[in-house]
Length: 284
Ligand code: ADP
Ligand code: MG
Image 1 (tube, helix red, strand yellow):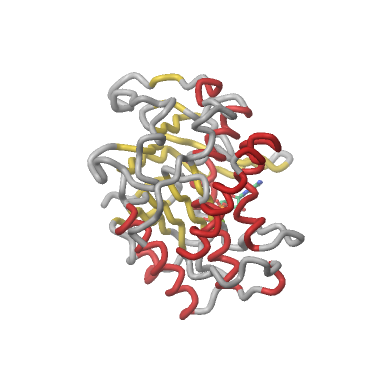
Image 2 (cartoon, rainbow, N blue to C red; image 1 turned 90 degrees about the vertical axis):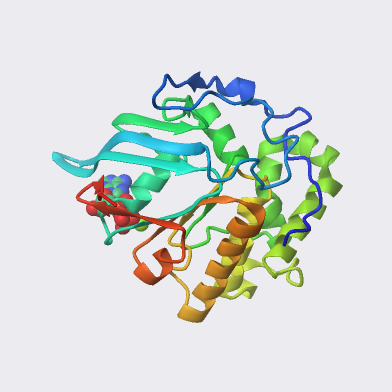
């Protein structure tokens, strides 16, 4: 695990440019001093942080979110306050329907809060235009879902390469094809799937599909891995294998992980557990 080859993260040589994201620095006390946002990954060891555990990387501030169905308003998050440091492995636990997925979607800008702020590296991100949010998700956030969301017509290797193809565009991807394929193979080996490169999702077990999804989430050297019930569709033993991979990624690669689960045993395997109750974070 610890001998991952040096890989220059995607887009470092052009392609997408975070300057396009037009991030707004967040006034204190919300955010820490903005870091060099445009090129923070270039000089870094893939997946590694320089000062794990000491600096806030992602946060939600007084976040509220309701859904509306016709005339009915469903209040879900009612002032969530959450701060996650670089290098932490945090689980968010709560009963089904309490808003865990909603919160995760807000953290990674898949959805926007009604009020409050979401910050990444001291920059407000919830109010970014769509294109900026797309770049952030493609480049900085790795996402893993309960039902894997693999593309059925692509092989394991192609699925892992998909974020690079989307983020770089055809020409950019072709220019760095060999590098990307090496990186994708390496990530598949990391999760124990180096022998399944040409399999299609239907030829994989549930655990193998989730490993593929984890490799796909890692291919762009994300700063944060966000996992929504990553073991929720797996048997106990396979779920433990997935948890072992996540723990190793956190411990050995210092990858920041935010994992949502309704399962206390799974949640307890993180360094810190945050409980959602009545739309808020319960006091620790
Ligand atoms: P959890 O992940 O904790 O099970 P969710 O965040 O998925 O909970 O959902 C929280 C609540 O919001 C649930 O009551 C759910 O029915 C409702 N909800 C989620 N998404 C939507 C939506 N798109 N439209 C309306 N209601 C939704
Ligand atoms: Mg959910």
